[in-house]
Length: 327
Ligand code: NAX
Image (cartoon, rainbow, N blue to C red):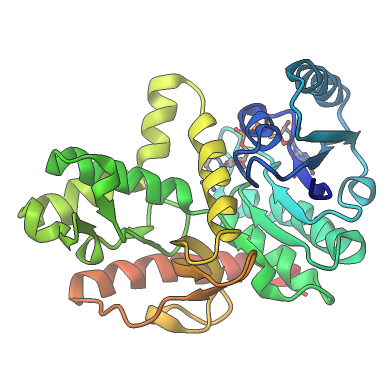
């Protein structure tokens, strides 16, 4: 039996947490032979901590063979202690009438503190995945606080967008979802993101050629993927939760699987037209468990370049809003 890994999860009593924790404990994230200890972190709010107690009781009641311990805390220095994976899901939601700049600032403060504490107390091999919005910029802020852990360890999730894009392409082409490959998300996890359909394949052939409808690909396809979160809120009356949790399972599972090819928001080194030092979605290949390299060499046509310029502009603007929060 392998020794357990420690997985810290913030926002553990939230919507996404409620779908996520059971998947982790069942082995979906780290595999069926990898025991885990869940270190659950919630905001210091009585209602949230009470809800967390209930979630922990349900985890007990599942009798998961791989779950070797549960920590419940509102103290991040306890929650992140010796954590091998830090899944930063908790964040303040955008309230009515709240400007995006205010959201950036309010959440930025959370990620300054969490970045510093993770750097101080997490395991030497710690990996960090950010889901709480605005995910790319929160990830940049957290990474900037770290002196011990390298910036490459901090990734933000664009996998939900990739999964959405894959599903839309399969539906349009009338093929099984598994036939669609190499659809990657570039840029911000926001409606400006760019699902680069020109590189996608269906059964090994160009998806764009098979679909043969550039108007749809450039218009409704990009829009549906970019605004899917809002469509789910409109239909369900609450934001995506199970699909977001599932995407985080995929994000981490792919990052621990050498050879996996997937979209992750990582620190930009200036590739594909992104400014350096913003966290932008791009295609990566996992090298060793927890490490990856950005896949280079995809050519971008004029349409793709204009979409990347727009999402890069938004990332640069977000960085400017929080310039005083970047260490
Ligand atoms: P909920 O509001 O249901 O849960 C968030 C939880 O975080 C709450 O229980 C809250 O008490 C807790 N929390 C707040 N501040 C905290 C802190 N400093 N430390 C620990 N816990 C804290 O939101 P949920 O639907 O679970 O969504 C969580 C985040 O994911 C939101 O920011 C949301 O916008 C973001 N999303 C990101 C997605 C992505 O693809 N990157 C997609 C889904 C989701 O919208």
